Image (cartoon, rainbow, N blue to C red; front, side, top):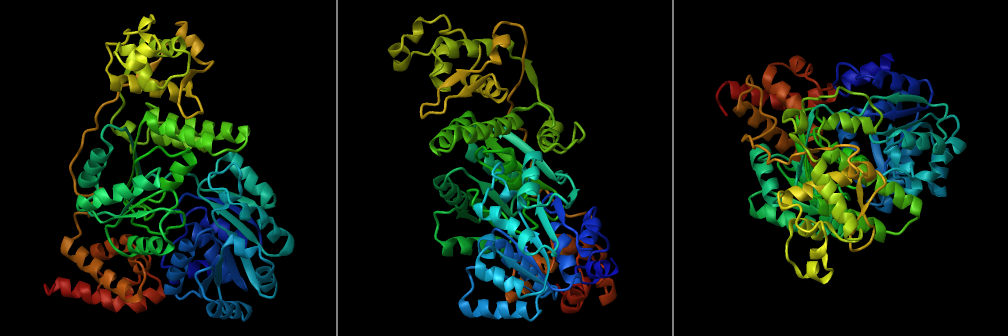
Length: 600
């Protein structure tokens, strides 16, 4: 491990490994296989990058998205590491040159998409080359039970068959027990050492609220919490993505849409601006984000309910990769559930698939409706034990007010039964509140015993009751375009008065005004901080790379706090290896010296 530690300190600029990086790297260097589950921002890349440099030959990284390849290669080349990629963005002449470099042993790392790797021509090329290891990134894509299933990943077991002597490492940040078992099975990793670093991202604050006026709620969140911060906003539809981006732009934010319906040129341009410019907000469908290695995303917002907890965890994990405070913020409503149910029904697939997806959606809804710690529930979903109070989610910071909802729940269940289990929530609430509508009279629902028995509760509160009953499995939505509510077997005891139920009382969130969730430490001068950021921006622009490729914010903060005066002092900063010390040290030292002398 002497070489590995030397590379960590002098090439990557870090003092020591994080657990369990050192053990993983030692396993690969010794020729063993590994399965690694590590949260986003936990340092997965180093687990295969360092062994690929230490071992003889080139490390082959199988990555599902082109964006990840480009960012990783830019960062590695900046450190003086011989890295490249093979994907559809290259012309034939570039491909030939990269293949030649591989054959001649001039590469440390080569990134390839799974669909390209399994082609006979690529396999032939690899067999003629010296390969140090195979790294299968986003390994959960191999699981048909996972949320990002890709058929090309199913064929990656050929690595075990065709290259039996080459160590393999499979990595993911999102996999429950069932998905992990399938990864092991499909990739032939039964003999692999397994390393689980846990799912917890303690720097992320989780906040989930009910939709009242979603746009106004989002605007308050951005203006009070994240003015001028980079972030991602997820919407369920392409139309809503574009409308939200346009509306935010009119509010003075630099917001750009991103979805599969846009041309590749526009998507590439918007992604590039997000990576390279400060304070850009991307409004996207789930088509955006996997593999985006931008460390200073300060928030991820959801304007609609995600389909699964796995999707939610992965999407929120794109915030705060630098370890600094970040927000995962979401608003949702019952209509989200109905819409997702209808989408699930219209998507086709087997009954087993629909049943599984419905179960996942129910788990997501339950996370939203709980009255206890959200982080604890989120980690429990992934079979990870944690403290029952994290102190950094909305339910911990502002404990939920509850009320005895037994009688209200019984009335809600009764109106579902009395109307034949085929009507939507809005109509059921109208019956309970005794509203006179054409639909009420059309079906003679004004004649029912339940008509007008719920006038003591307003419409919004009734929506909350139905939503919580659905989250806890007492009722469900019929999988058809009408979205009728039906009773589940679980409701019998509640209807008979054999059990009681506590419901959460929806309250409007108090808003604390502040410019950013990540204020500068008191010992850092704002003028020095901005001068260093501007220096980084100019260097990044001149080289055509994102600013974080030069230095992460964490390095700039340390630089602004310690104010190094010599190259040796500069080299002691976290994230500063030998190459970056020599390349950027003089420039930043000049900025610091000029700031101290009052020239800036």
